[in-house]
Image (cartoon, rainbow, N blue to C red; front, side, top):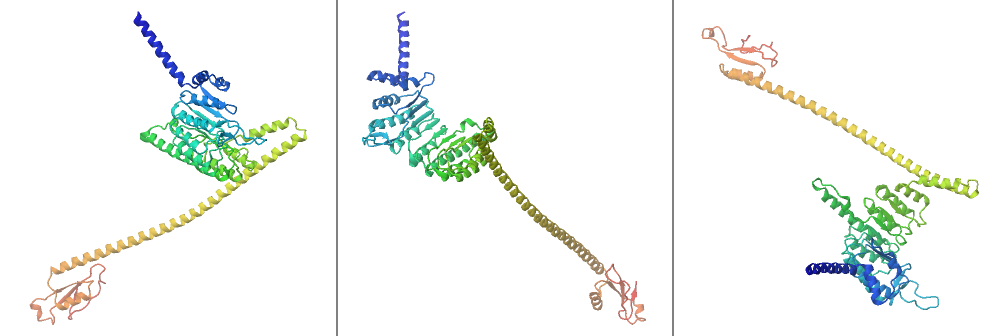
Length: 500
């Protein structure tokens, strides 16, 4: 009985120890324990925002004291439970010699304001955040908004970010990281394919910062192509959930980006199929950037939203064209506005608004009509060029056919001549063979044979009894063979000839 009691007590003790260890790594329990140990009242912003089902931390710390930040730092150091962590400041701060202070350092009376965080506490906070990113394996949303993160502070944070494998959203809005900080951050972000959202709004970025972000998109695009190729080997299926990368990009309120900064992004996004949203509000864009964006959207059909609001130098026609490229239902919006004006059509303001809307719609239709006419004209020119090329090719084809026929005729003639020569050579060979079987000719007959090469000749010598009556003993017997002689010629040789 005592043994059973001891075992049950040991199990209960083990459960309590595990529960205590788990609570020790939980942010809320550790924060409350630190407040009790140091006799501080817990901040209501932290206690009320936490839920047991989904623990998260999302607070604005403009009114926190230095000891409040110290308690938050100590509670975050060993946390492994927060999935959503956000520390925000409503004002924009900068790091001075004594700590972080607002950008307006002096009050109206000339006295310097007290720092929100002294230099030592701020350094500990940044190091703790880096440790939090390194050790927390469940965090998915990480936000540091309004804190100055330039230089060494950002490098410290990046060291922890490089070893994180669970982060999905990173928000560094109003942290003033600049172009150099953006390069250092993007050098590590491109190796984090699970990161889908990057917010660098109001971070003092220029064209160089956009180049760094564009390099991230290009690098991850090549990585996705390589992953797709590996999955497609041996007829494998490509798994879309493993093709990770940036999908949502926030670069708003960076007026130094300008048209050429947007050009760096659109050149990369033309053949990208993964980025879904890009926000570039108040980035100093003009109609030139709108043209770059229109060309990009003409080639990229995967972008769902491209926010260009608060860029006052972009005309309404360019905005409407971008909306058309994005597939927005502009007619519904126009119908809604028209219905709102029809509610009170007799008022002068309503009629004026209606006229302005119709004029804008007419201008947009004229612009689209002009574009379509230019496209039709270009297609007609291409058709004419194709017709000229076809006629030239037909002429070349007819010339080739004619030359081929001539070559075939010449070849047939040459074959006919060769066959005739071959037949004549065979007959002469047969004739010489028959002559060899007969009596040999004398020298005079050989000469006659050379002169009349087309005739067959042979010499017949008379008998001994006829030698007395004839003056000459030889007779030439001529015979026409084929078309080699005229056949009716009779030539006396030595005064006597006989024709057969």
